[in-house]
Structures are given as C-alpha cells and as structure tokens.
Length: 337
Ligand SMILES: *Cc1c(COP(=O)(O)O)cnc(C)c1O
Image: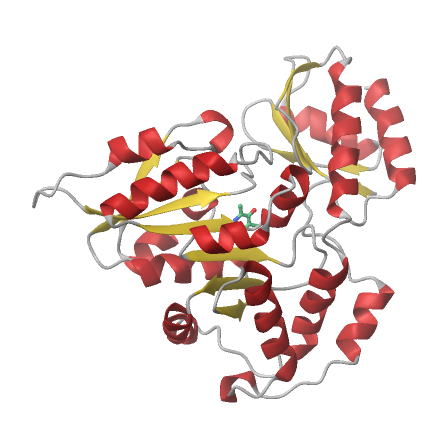
C-alpha cells in the first residue's frame, strides 16, 4: 500500500528504534527521566526559549497553551480552518471555557489587519479578546506557510493590544525548511509554540510546548490535571530526540515529492484545481466524474490510500515512509485514472 493519508503513519526506522531501546529512563513525574529532560532542553534551545514540556499529542500542547493564556469568558482569535477549532473536539470550550473569533483568510492564513479589526471593544457585552493563535504550516490550507513579515505584523497588533500569541506549529519544521526561516525568530516572537515530533519528523509519539520558564511551570500543572503527566517516557522521548537530531533537513524530500505529484496532476483531465503546494501536503479538487468516495475507492483498488478533505477535495501527505518506488508507481496510477 502507498499510504498518503497522513505523515503521522510512519514507523520508527531501525536507527530510531535502537535509540529508543538504549534510552536512559526514570520517573518523569518525579522529574527524574534524563531523556525527557534532554529532549525538552534541546527543543527549548533550538528556539531560544526558556523551557519546554513533552506531551502526548499536539492537541494537548495546543490546549494547554490556550489554557495558560486565557480565563473564562475570554476569546481566541484564529482562522476558521484552525486545527485548534476544527479538530480538537471542542477543547477550547471544554478545557478553557473560552469562545473563538473565527477569521477568513487566504489558504488558512490570517492577516494583521483582520486581527486588529476582530479585537472586541472594552464593553461588558463582549467577550475579552485575549490571544491570537496561528497555524504554520496550515493543514487545511494545503500545507501553506506564513510570510514571516506578516507574523511580525500580527505580533505588533498583539503587543499593542495586550494579546498573547500562540503558534500551532505541528508542522513548523516543514515551514522552516521550505521558507529557509530560523527557529529562533519564531522563539522570539511567540509566547508559546506547539511542535509535533510525530508528523514529518517521524517519531511515533509526542509533541512539545515551548515557552517561558514560568509558563511551562504552570503548563505542567495543567498537563497533570489532563492526566498527561508521565513516568518512564524516556523511551519515546528518545525517538523525539533522534528525530530532532536527524530528520529535519530531509523534510525537503517530502516537499519535492509533493511538488512532483502536483506537477503530474496538473495535466490530468479529472483534476479541476490544485492548491498551491508549498510543503508536504497536497490538496486538489476532482471533477464531477468522481465523488470523493468513488475516487478514493478507485485509488484503493490500485493500492493507494488518501483522505477526502471537503467536497470534491482530496488530500495527499508525503512523508518518511513514502519511497522513490512509491512515487514512480503513484505517478503511473494517477495517469491511468
Ligand atoms: C496533527 C496536528 C495537531 C496535533 O494533533 P495530535 O494528533 O493531537 O498530535 C495540531 N495541529 C495541526 C495543524 C495538526 O496537523
């Protein structure tokens, strides 16, 4: 099977697996797991931030981030396609008791101008605008990336209006590689950043929340109440460390593969539109010749798995386990449909 459903499907390579088996571990709830500590330290240093917290998932790191910045009756400003809003099971409401102000924007990106216009007046009828959350790369925007100057402009609006600034960076490393940007620039700009080790980086589990020492100290308490404090997590943290040390630069291969697939789709009569392909996510619109179901079934007959991502929209995600042979086969299959 050629599995393009997600970059979360990768299995540890023998080298990553060996690193996991060799991990030194301890009880992390006692602060005694040296591998978890090393992972948190490495990630914080990469971004020039004071501290990091290793968590089970990106949903958890996002939800903790939102909780740290808000209190009941506050509001989070974000794009209407944000993962924090669409795909975290209503957690903004149930974990933090806050509402959302959803913005429109090109390929899932919001602008400083729209953020400024969305800030609520200081009036008892309105929720309190308290934070802005960006997503980079933007999953539902087809792996689109922010221009860093726009991020700085949004930061300025946040600073002027006392808003916290959170980044859902589940695939931030894809953006850094694709746009040749620096992790420290992000660390300087955001109050909290969530990064995932289990997407393109290829680790089996885990995400990190980055922030100030004070914020991360509070984050530990929130993680605990969510049932997310762990014991000998060093075994999986070792995979995350391995991923940060070895798997970042190779994301460029995933981007190249996605671009090659996009170029092939471009000439095919059943493809009506292809979203701009900047990283490892490729979204395209199929013609009425197929429904999502019939198209996905046809792909499956040929040994290809993918997801529907809206009406007549199909998503492919390239990753670590997508080999050059897979690419050759896939291009042949796509041309035959
Ligand atoms: C995958 C993802 C997350 C986190 O998801 P988990 O499955 O909880 O790890 C967060 N944001 C985006 C944009 C994602 O793609």
